[in-house]
Length: 246
Image (spheres, rainbow, N blue to C red):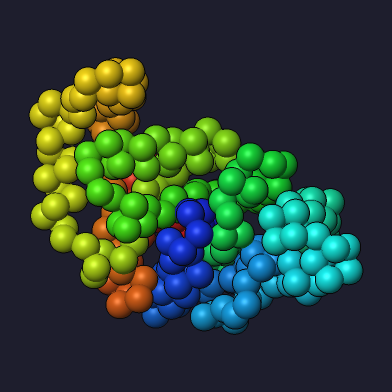
């Protein structure tokens, strides 16, 4: 049993990737369960095996407790965390029938990562667990942006305490050569700039440079369904299991 926790900034395509990766795995003959943990989702492109909206929704909290959107998201995370044992039982009930469970997390990743829900979930799941950390190409405007987003992937790994794969989604909207040029320039000389922010960026590059020896960015397009096989292989690399995850 392998659990995949999909995390990323709002709008990075977590739900679309959940559908695309799950569909690819099913076509490869695997049994897949889908877990939605986003209480603010208006609609989902896949049919969840478990949907947290049956427990709590942002809309209902805003109406019943008089909260704003951000307060309702935080409150929903607290309610979900309090009910985590119950949610885990529902996941475990499907374990014998599923090879993979894909977990679609809330749009505001900081609520999932920096409060108790994310770390508690990742350490409580049975079987092998890995996070899929999405990079939105719309946030890549220069070399330093790639450094920052790679560091964010490291934060995901540190907070959840599990291996993490960095995935650039929406690759159909982005020039692969440009991303490779970014990575090659970072390896060649890193980000160099003047001033206090430049000095900090230069030091952060040293951290990224060390990570580059064991990490790579997987290019996918969840909308078009491309790159799923490469993502599957990256899971095997993360577990050092030669791609055999079952």
